[in-house]
Figure 1 (cartoon, rainbow, N blue to C red):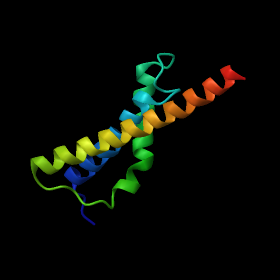
Figure 2: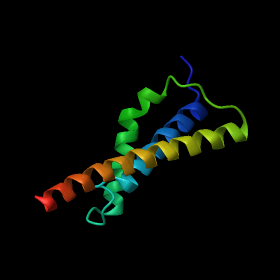
Figure 3: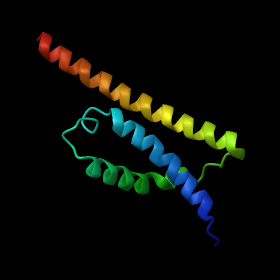
Length: 98
């Protein structure tokens, strides 16, 4: 069994980018109550846990492919974080109305 270090690093980077973007806008983790070191450590730990899900993906070819893949992962992470934030804001608004 051979290890391709470049593939491992790139797939971990893609997973970490999505998680980091989601953590930036997530309702609980996006607040200033949690220190940056804790957020970074949690992002690294979750990246290590979710890496096997990214291990089967094919790697993009060329610089433009890498940039597009990284931008796509960043966009998906931002959408996930903002969607969670919208849900929590809706719940908070409903509580205030009641």
